[in-house]
Image (tube, rainbow, N blue to C red; front, side, top):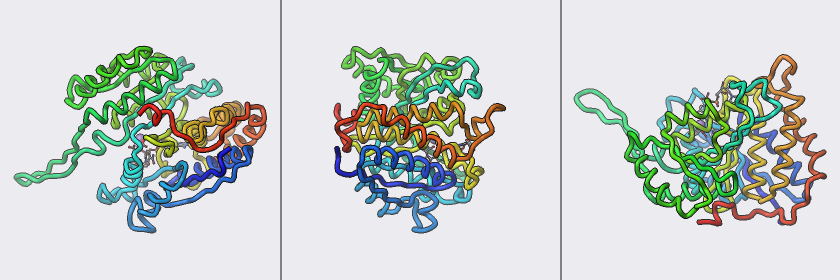
Amino acid sequence: MGKQWKICVLPGDGIGPEVTRQAVKVYQTVADYYRIPAELDEALIGGAALEKEGMPLPMSTLNRCRAADAILLGAVGDPKWDDQSLAMRPESGLSALRAKMGLYANLRPAVSFPALEDVTPLPRSGGFDLIVVRELSGGLYFGDKGIREEDGTRSAYDVESYSEKEIERIARYAFQVASQRRCDLVSIDKASMLESSRLWREVVERIAPQYPQVSLRHLYADHAAMELVRNPKQFDVILTSNLFGDLLSEEAAALTGSVGLAPSASLGYTAIGIYEAVHGSAPLLAGRDVANPVGAILSVAMMLRYTYSLEMASKAVEWSVMETLKRYRTADIASPQFSPVGTEEMGNQVVEQLKKILPSVIPEPSAGAQENPGAKML
Ligand code: NAD
Ligand code: IPM
Ligand code: MN
């Protein structure tokens, strides 16, 4: 057993603090079960940090994140900060944190929940289980950007640029993830129009022979967006760029019934990761105890899997969510048979299930923080 767990909690803005509270309860329940002292450090990010410290990612927050095993993050952003410069926006704080921590691989699973078949937007789409491996620290969001003025008119630009090294490391990560799943990888780009995508395709093709067990195909991003809603079951692992991954992972999340259900892990060369729901700060829901905490809770399951290497504990959290969804639903996934419960109640119900399930899982020998699988192959 590891001596102690230490996470840094960044609640952020909007519904971030509410959903994070539920995720922390789940984390604490697992730590208590393994009798591991868990230290929770809480720090500011996004708009909350902007208000109190004048910047969306204060140095103290970065340092405290670096001192933790893992980071549990809520969400950032609100229209009230829309007039800030790009660098000062809450979203830039999050994006900078991911980059400064070297987290280049964003894993976003989307798995259909049998209990939610009645609320999925596609009636016959059930039974899918896919994961998007999104490149997270390069591409359009990190390229040169600016505004120039010529002859009295302004033009704005954002450059999409990927080096061979950046493509290769995320592609290796995705091949590795595929090797541990159903060995089917789809790389998504827009090689019909973009030089960066042509290089992307070339590099992915070049390293593919090193993973002969994985079958690889390429799709253009527009075609992929269509295939995802037409037949999500065809996908196992999706490898794609920062921008396309942002869009396609949210589309995949919606197929499960609500974007509020989707978790994510942002990983790099070490076991330290950021674990956060895919959704944003949902300003209209904030402070009303209506947001779905499942995405945040399932992000704790990912933390247990990738930072602490506790596969069974991770599964126990996932099973607890699946059991809970059979009887309790928040407003975003409610249907006539279910009167919706609030964020807090949903969190409590998952914790109750977890307390019942944990004693039946196989005990795991090492509950200390370890290297993540991506780190091992690089
Ligand atoms: P959003 O994800 O906040 O909301 C999109 C829709 O989904 C809304 O209808 C919202 O009510 C609903 N929704 C989101 N999370 C939910 C939950 N847990 N339970 C129930 N319903 C939920 O996206 P947006 O409206 O485009 O963005 C709002 C703010 O969040 C913006 O400032 C944006 O930049 C920011 N944002 C942050 C993150 C992040 O922190 N990782 C991600 C996306 C957007
Ligand atoms: C997400 C968000 C972020 C992103 C923003 C808030 C920086 O949309 O986590 O998907 O673009 O990655
Ligand atoms: Mn997004």
